[in-house]
Image (cartoon, rainbow, N blue to C red; front, side, top):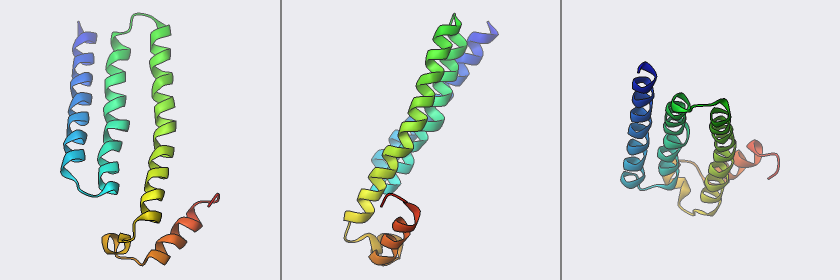
Length: 117
């Protein structure tokens, strides 16, 4: 009984995080702000929901599969977000108005941070 109550609390908290991030996706206008809102659902919401499902799982195999899914999503999400942010900064001509830097300074910032650039 305690396991079901704790799992319900975790699932509700995860759904709340996901609902807040969806609200942020609709509310924010700029791509980088929307990416930040979406990362809330990726990390916190996903973790809480999957922890709740892990508590409800009946055997170790299901818990292991859910854990591997979380690990995969936590590894893939930052890479995708980085590619989207890099594309936005390099292709947006008005980026200097958004973040208060010249385009060349942003270009140098990305060039110094990314070894494959």
